[in-house]
Length: 356
Ligand SMILES: [Zn+2]
Image 1 (cartoon, helix red, strand yellow):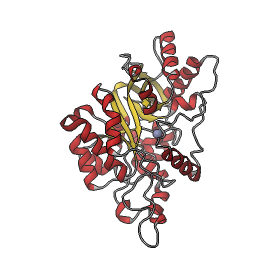
Image 2: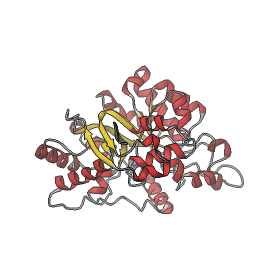
Image 3: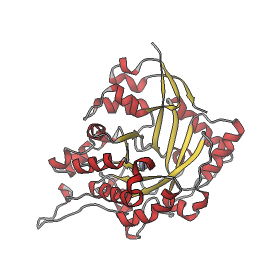
Image 4: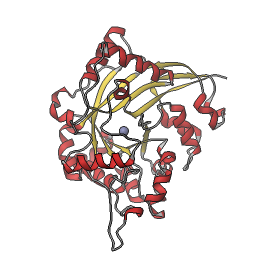
C-alpha cells in the first residue's frame, strides 16, 4: 500500500558543501583532530562559523549543474527541502539561482543559513530572495564544540577529564551570551533567523541568555533556533519552552553519541541528555535535521532512529517532526507506520513534489 504525506524536510545539513567537494577544516571522524581544531579556533578568539582559514571550493565546469544534480539525489531520498546550516561562500547562492533560473524550479527547495563570519563581511547581501526554491533565511552562529571530542561547553567537568584535586575540563565556549547577543542583534533586528550551535548545557544556557537580551518578550515570534540542544536540564527545557526558542535536533545523535555520553557524563547529566521527549512534553518547538555528512541524509534513517532509540518517540510524532506539508508532499511505496523499523531505511520513494 502506497502512502502520500507531507514532504520530508531537513533543517540542518552540510549537503551543498559535500556536493561541491569542499573539504571540511578537519577529519570529523577523528575526535582528537576535532578537539585540536576547536582549540586552535578558540585560541584565535574565533569560531568554526567565522573561520576563513578553509580550503576553497574545488573548480567545477558547471557549478550550478553540480548542485542541481546533488539536489536531485536528495529528492530521491524523499526530501522536498533542505537547509544548509552554515554557508561559507556566496558562490553557492549564485550557482543555485542560476540553476533555478535555467530550470524554473529545483528538484528540492533550499534554505540557507549563512555562516556568521560571511554574514558580517557583507551584511547587505543577507536578504531574503523571496524565492520559494532558494532562500536565505538567517545566520548560523557557533557557541561550543561537540561531545565526542569533549569540546562542548558543560557545567560539570567531563567525568573522564576531572582533576584529582577538583575541577577539570568543561569544554570550549566559543561565544558567551554577551558576545552572541552583540553579534546577532543586527541580523535579528532585520527579521533574519538566528540559529546557534549549542550542545553542552553551559552553551545552551549562554545562548538562551543571549536570546533573552536580543528579543525580550518578542522571542517566540522571532523563533530563534538552538542547533543540537543535546545536554539539557529541567530548567533549560523550561526556559526554552517559556521563550519560544526552537530546538533543531538530530535524530541519529542519541544513537551515535551514546557511548561517548556514557563515558563523559555523570548519571545525573545523562538523564537529561538527548531528551526529545521532555522537550516535546514541555511544549518546546522541535524541528529535525540530519547534520549530513555526520549522519546519513535519508529521512527514513532518521525516522527509524527516532522511533527505536531512547527516548523512543511514537511513529506519528516522529513523522510530524520530520515533515512539513507546507514544503511539499512525498509518495512512498509503503505506509511507514505499518512497517517494521528495520525496514524503514529501505523504503522506496516514488515521488517528491516540493511546493513551488
Ligand atoms: Zn552541523
